[in-house]
Length: 264
Image (cartoon, rainbow, N blue to C red):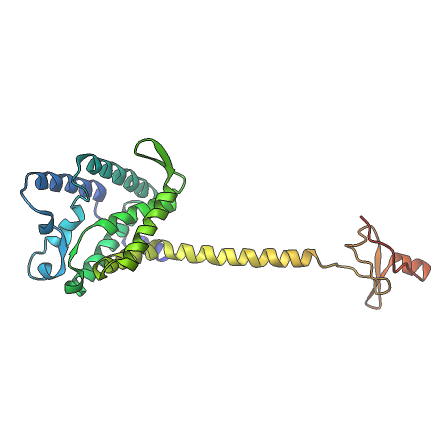
């Protein structure tokens, strides 16, 4: 039984119902507040030092800060998040879905509080990106219409997202790196064991195929006199005497043609 199965078996009743609608509705409310100039994004984003000084709301509000203030892209973002989140909910159930986002949230917050000076302001960009990676992993053949015209399979969007993560990790600063490491911790928890098992199965399959090819090319019978084999002469008969293999021709005639060409 996997770790996730054990967790679900023990704590499957404990989760936040309707987490996805809550996150999306929170983004809508924050978007409206930002439009009305009632609040600034920097007041809601996660910041370790400020959270430790009493601004504890930042531990939660950073999860609902919109990634775009453009109305069109904001609506597209809501729709895509709802689409992918709903698919993951149906695939995993509410407990695993909450565990997925909750683990990413917890690791991000922990990294921010442990290294408050190094991290600085934190958005939900890499956490929400995990939804894309998980969706691409589980439903790689689903197609999205880029710019409402170009059909692209989500597995390619997933590869692009991995590329963004990798580029940000190697070229970004430590705040970004810590956020990416927190996101990857969640990925390893959910998909790491499956990937390790898949790699082990692939290696076993390759070893089996290699051994099968080796055995396939090895004759089972070989005449000790003329060297005929059941592969070179599939219609020939072979007998064993005193633990040695002889072709039927040798046993019948007392001799056999050592230069006889293989049968085709």
